Structures are given as C-alpha cells and as structure tokens.
Length: 282
Length: 240
Image 1 (cartoon, each protein chain N blue to C red):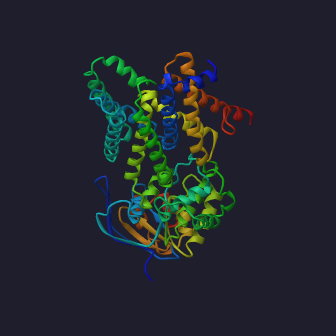
Image 2 (image 1 turned 45 degrees about the vertical axis):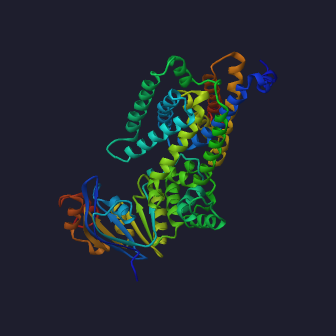
Image 3 (image 1 turned 90 degrees about the vertical axis):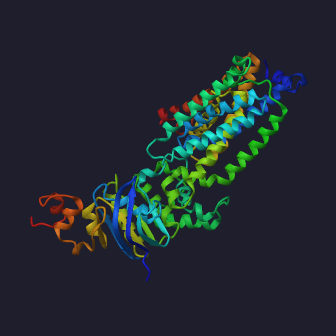
C-alpha cells in the first residue's frame, strides 16, 4: 500500500478508528520518549517493565466492570509504583527484588481477574498485544490531557530529576526530597505506559519507553538534544509502524516495536561518534 | 569567631550498628584538616553526619553552608551532561523548585570552574574527562555554593601522582578562605600537606598538627597495628 492510500484511509470516515489509533500511538510515543530518557539514564528499565505489567489488574477490573481502562490502569500502576518506592526504602532488600515481587503479583492478579470475564481469551490477547480498534472517543481527550500534564511535569521538575540521577547522595545532601521525586517519576512512567497500553499492548509497551530514549542516547551527548530526539523517534516509528501494520495486515504493537528496534540498530551502526562504523573507521 | 563546622559529642549508627561515639570536631576557616582512619572507622559516616544525611544518636552539629565532595563513584559519569551542567546541579536547591537558572547562577558555575582551572573544558561531556578532572568537577560543584566548610571524601582514590599533587595544591588554596576536611588513606601526604590531622576510629583518638602526633601509640590504636608496622616507619615515628 502506498503512503497516499494510507493517507486516504486515515481520512476515510468509515475507518474512523484508524486516525484515533494513530493519534493515541503518536501521543503515547511522545510521552514515553520523554519520560523514557530518565528511565534509560537511571538504568531503571526494570521499573518501566514492572509498571507496564502492574497496570494489568487495573485494566482487567475496568474491563470487567465496563469502566475506563485508562483510569483503572493508572490507579493500578500508581499503587504498584508507590508500593515499590516504599518497600525499596528498606535497605535489606534490593530494589529489583522488590520490583520482581510486586510486578509479577500484579500481573497474576490481573490474569485471575480477567479470567472471570466472559470471552476472556480474546480480551486477554487484546490487552497483551494491543489493538487499534475499540478506542472510545473519550480516551482521545484523556490521552491528550495526560500528554500535556506529563510534559508539563517534566518541564517543571527536570533539573531536580537530573540532580537525583547525577548523584543521589549529593541531591540528598542539598536537601532534595528524593523519595517524592522518585515517586513522581514512577507516576509519570505509569501515565506514559498506560496511555500506550491500548495500542501497543501490555507486554510490548516497554519498547516505547526504552528504545527511543536508548536510540537517542547513541546519537548525542547532550541531554536537551536527547530529550527532543527520543519523542521524535518514538512518534516517527509509531507512524511508520502503524502504516506498515495497516498495509500488510500485521499486528500493530509488534510492528511498531520492530520498527523501533530497526531504528535502534541503525543508530547503533551509524551513530556519528559512538556508532560501530564510526568506531571502526576511527 | 564561630567555627565553620562544630560537632560535639556526636554518636551515629549505621543499620543498627554503632559507628561513631563521642565525636568532637571543630574546624575553622583556614584549616586544611585530614581525616585519617582505617576502613570502617567511620570517616564517611562522620561526613554524612556533618551534612545531616543521617540521624544523630546523640550530640549536636553546627555548620554554615557545607560543600560535599563524595567519592567519585557516586556520580553518574555516563550521563549526557557537560561540565558546566554538572557544576550547575550543585545549585538545584538555590535556583528553587519550578525555576530555571538565571545568568547569575551560570556565572557562579563558571566562576567555580575557573577556580578549579576547568574553565576551558566547561562544555565537554563529563564522560570524557580524566579522573583528576572529574574530581575537580565535583569540587567545583561543591564550591558553587560558597561553602564555609568543604568535605572531601577520599578525593585521591585511583588518581596518579601529578593529578594528586594538582589537587592538593587546589585544596590548600581553597583552605585559605574556608575550612577543608579531607578523608584520605594517603597518610604520609596528609601529614606533610595538612595543617591538622584527626585520627579517627569510631571516635576521635587524637587531633592536632602532625608534629604533635609523634606518639606511635596513637597511630597503633587508630589503625590497629603492632609496634613493628611499616606504617610507623613510613611516618618516621620509630627509629630506623
């Protein structure tokens, strides 16, 4: 399918779900790209994974009671983030163990809950691997509003997030409240992830958080550039991935993730200073 | 004149284990003081107590603005930040929540970089610096607050000789206007360059100018070594 035909389909009123899916995929890719920069730089990919899985019981409950999936997922994700932050203060247990406990427990809870829903196999697949149909109009506003809120929070707290990432001990010595900043960051990760879950799916959403930020990191040594590149890469790959998935009738989540992976591999080979080719040529 | 840092009867625990007991320390502007003791003696804990990073079990700490230079591995060196970004991060609280740095804040950062002789590297990514340069970035980040006392936690670890000497000169210069407390394992250099030594092992065993600490017994108690130790010979405390 040519890009022109894709454009025609996007504007076809009979295919109204398509531009909706594209809008949500692009906005959540922007959010995930920006927040993902902190996740990648702090080496907390595992927390992103945990939050992504932890939203599942919330989605399942919302699905069972026909509530808002976005709201259900956000609540579950924030509760898990809070539990991880609180339990990780205990120095006897390392953070990754705490995360390992809570995210699998949350996921298990989600499986048990959704098994009570009629026709559960189909909806399970939709949750896990994403889908572009069945997005209510209301979600467009929720995702749009959340994007603005997340970007605003990042803009306002950026220098604090940077200080905590650079040197936690020093940040505490300066009097920053690291507990609240950690919690705030986890909440932002949760929001970005929940918005992306519907189109990309619960299992694959981690790629939207990590891959664009990691790709951008390979391309620059400047944080400001990285935080502009990552959402651009994420949004671009969401667009291309959706186009490819629509043209060839491929699952949308998987196609977007593979497009992102392709971009990462290209950057890994051809990045200006740290790429494989540049290093071999040097 | 009030002290730059005063700790009176300080006790602190780490994970329920007593680490410091009855610690008295007083530092004044113009003092370059070395904090000496074996691993586990509580050197880092003493600094963290002085900074208010850990709760005190007993005692009081009085200090003006304290500048902290933690061990180099505490800093995320692969972060995509320039040298000036790293120094500016020392001002994060002073800039204030939800605010952006102003020209005055950047000036303060550049001025601090000037003082550690890194002005010409201010735009370089921190990941591309040598060990000695990294240490100077951390010193500049502490100086940007114009602290009355500078706390250096093992600044020489992993550095070669010219880098150590450049830093020592820098610390001596800083100590003309401020109090500097440096935890170190380099005993001979400390004895030679610092105005005062504090021998610490859970508590202050002794403190004073190196010339006043000639009793080998003090060093044996601090470092838990016998009378035949190389340490005592290196410090010229026993007859050759």
